[in-house]
Image (tube, rainbow, N blue to C red; front, side):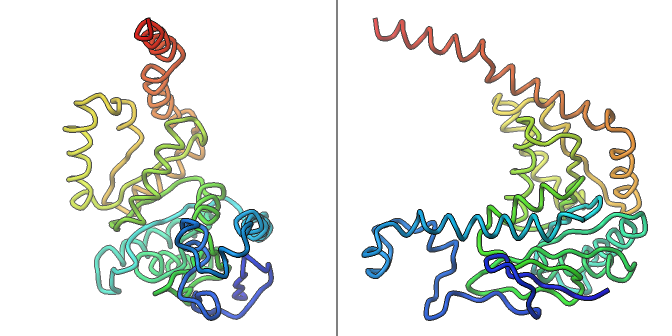
Length: 289
């Protein structure tokens, strides 16, 4: 299968390359977008409407991503640390899982970098399946790994995150750091609020995730910040075969996982629904008088 890497901002295929910062600058596109106007270089401050024009760049990334992935079949997005080495058990398990998914006819999507991402792309590659890498421009890393068939180079995190969600039927979360946790909790929020449906989120590696699960039970749950239904959104496994089977089951029996999602949405409605909003409005009116 021919390797293709797309620069999302200009929308054309290129040779695989490392993510680069802007010419003559140490700042990435994301850094420039999120910087306060008071922190911007003098040249940018003189161009007072830089951010509105930046919308065109953002739009081009969405168009390029949608166009490149439009024909992609059912897929699973796999997340995890970029720092995990090839001899780590988690690397081998991610590779095995991706191989099983590819043999089952599912494409594998990752962030396209090293570590768990490389392992998952490698498994799909070795199974002759679709291996997708959605890379991000960073000031210190990372090139697309050699096991990606179709790669897209993004400059903006939020555009890239949209592609992870839109083109996947499930998320599998291997041990990872802040970036991995970011993807995990964004997916849970989208499910909890009904933005995506029938979307399993599976934590791989019970020993790694147990501390987080314990904290969710003992702190946010006991303090009423989340509900029992929210916790049902998370599944935990240590078996690549079991994860594959869970995903295939969710695709064949949509009502199976949707029961968990419905519980989470109901808990959210009970906490934040119209009745609660009306009661808060009444209390505010009384307080004014």
